[in-house]
Length: 308
Image (tube, rainbow, N blue to C red; front, top):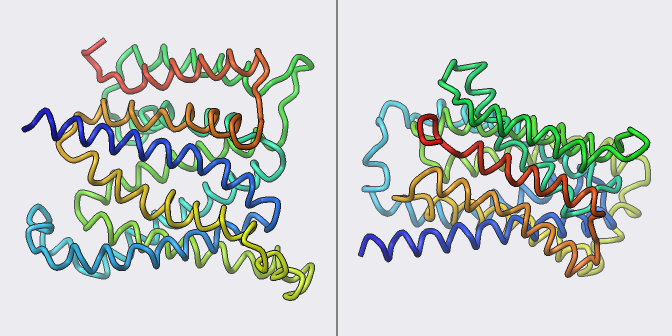
């Protein structure tokens, strides 16, 4: 029974990685119809609304809160934690969306974003002084070489769009540390909903000034008359954010954290496949070498100290 549950959870996480990988294609397509602030704001507002039925259903099961300290579930603390995570998520998502909009392909963006898996343990070591094994530093070195091949061309220049996606990986690292700090104390789905709401509201405020004001409300709203604009937006909002996050919560239960992280890191591979199949985007041999090295670095980053 336990083995069947582990297999089921592993498959759920693989499905999650596939959903997240295809989301890079949705973001690329969405950037053709709307600005980065519009896409990010609407995406996370819809995602927050989509989690409301999940919250209603889980609240009907008191055992869901059995492991939480009642005092830590006070609404004030939950909202504070959600807002902090939401601000960080907004920064990361906006920078990522802008990088994709400026030309970084779906597959390439997936691999650059995946470097957060290498950055998180480093930040854990710097901020919280948690032990870091030599394998991680080997992964960091390999990852840096991979980024060189993936982002820097033969003329030793880096595209602005690639730099933005790399900055997004740094921002996601801080966001993950914040979630890691708060998630054991609060209900995970409620924390996610508040995080999504905060991100959506902040991006929507920026949307008014950056996307609507320069062109006017009528011109801004024109693309939404077509399903071509709605399909990538709804995919990113409902499948990638709301459904993907819920599947992650279910899939990680009872599964080895290292195995779970490795499975979810295949998101970048799915991003390359989706970019190739749907958008006909291809990585150059140099970029493929860089992507392969980053994949190795990601695997090494998941190996716990003492388990080299």
